[in-house]
Amino acid sequence: MILFVRNIFYRSFSHSMQYETFKKVILERLTNDIPDPKNISIQSVQKNNGYVLDGLVILENHCNISPTIYLNYYYEHYENGISFQEIYHQIMLAYQQNKPKQNIDVSFFTDFKNTREKIMFKLINYELNKEQLRDIPHIRFLDLAIVFYILIAVNKDIGNATILIHKSHLEYWKITEQDLYQIATGNTCCTLRPKIQNMDEILRDLSDPAGKSGPCLSGEDDVRMHVLTNQYNLFGAACMLYSGILKSFAERSESDLYILPSSIHEVILIPAKDDSSLSDLSEMVREVNRTQLHEDEVLSDHAYYYSLEEDSIRL
Image 1 (cartoon, rainbow, N blue to C red):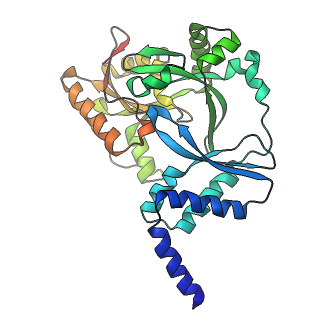
Image 2: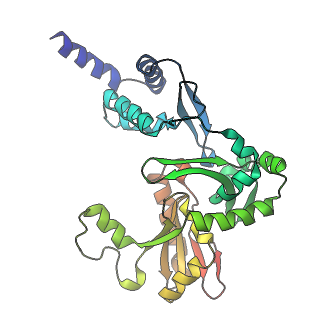
Image 3: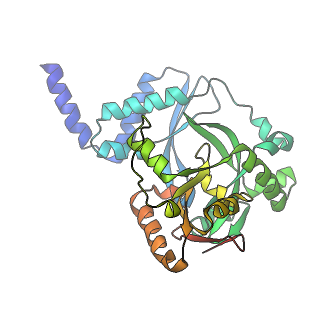
């Protein structure tokens, strides 16, 4: 009876918990459950598009690296009715699955010979990151910016580890922004290989994991949507800059293309019959950005147009 009453009280308390209390209770529970030596903290992390998240960092046994667990997302699940106990279990599980087994040798980053092959590029929104870009080497592209990062690790199941490159790194390495771009162009295309998948196939996989055939979901063959990303679905919108990728697809489609930036991780390709509906497509993109994406995943509010004849992308 006492246990039952205590559980009722706990559920009542947890469902009225404010975010600051939520973070405090998480820290208290982790402090009790993780053995010493340890260092547990919550740090403000500046993400893409000026989005600031609360990153939980757990360092055990004097380890110098830890996965960053963003509590904002877990609190959203909590507000949507998931119990605090289940949320806490998910956080612990995420940490246990992703915690490093050994220290990382940070000296590799100071030696350019070690980092050269790990330099990649990605696309972000220029205006939404204008302040941050003052300290970041970048190249303008339409309403976007090409920025660069070190790809430390990438794994389809448990995530990835990256380090954003700043101007201070170029000074240390004694290379130019153009050097960085040329290196990243070669690395990114080879390491993060592009893939184009028919939207019908993606929707079928989501609706029927067994892979049974079903009806066409996106319309006639000549107007079907395709998703362009890379094999890891990591910053895959940058694939539209890969040499020849759009040209090859447009030639097979025998058409120019609309490009819908659905997130920083992928774009949607649609064969273009005329460009009069480009504004409608842009409105569709804006609606998806407002209702379906986290703020740090938004790439652009504009649809793009690829001209096969000119082999170029424009707004």
